[in-house]
Image 1 (cartoon, rainbow, N blue to C red):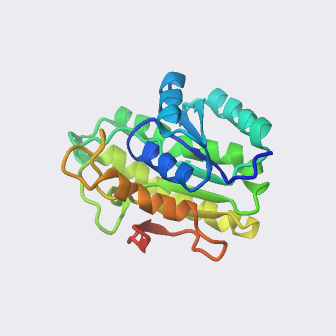
Image 2 (cartoon, rainbow, N blue to C red):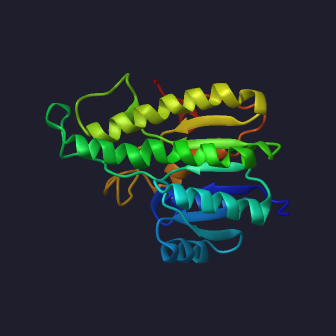
Length: 230
C-alpha cells in the first residue's frame, strides 16, 4: 500500500488541474491524474513525472466513476485527497433572461452532478484515510454576494457546488474529512482566456486546501487562503 498521500485530481490534463497535480506531486503526493481521454491523462502524467499516475475519467459517467473507484481501491486501498476540478461551459455569450436551459443542464452535469457522484463513490476510500480532504474548485462567479446576470450556466452550477460543499462538510465533519470550495481567481487558461493571473498562482490556493492540517477549516469558500463571500 502506498505510504505517500494519495490524491486524485479531475480534469487534470491541462490548466489548473494539471498545475495542481504538478505542485502536489512535487510535495511527494502520489497524484492520480484524470482526464476524459486516457491518452490525455497519460501524457499529462508523463509530463508531470515522478509521483503521477494516469486514469481515464469522465465525471458524468457512472461507469467511469465506478471503474476509477475500483482501480484506486486496488492500487492504494484509500484516497487521502479528492480535488474536484473538472468543469465546462464558461458561457460568456449568455444572459439569464435568454439562457438556453439545455446549456445550463449540460453545465450542471459536469460541474455539480459529476463532483457529487464521484465524491459519493469515493467516500469509503476517503474514510479509510486518516486525513481525508475534498476540494471543490469553484469560482467567485458562484458567489451570491456578487452575482449578476452573466455566465448563467456556469454561475448557477458553481453556486450549487458551493451549496454541496457546505452540506458535505457538515456531514463529514465527524469523519475528520475537511471539505472546502476554492476560487482560483481569473487564471490564464483555455477556459479563463488570456490576461489572467499565472496558473501556478491560481493552483496554489487549491494546493493549500488540499494540504490543510487536521485543525484546518471545513465548509468554507476561499481564494488564496482567504474567505470569499458566499
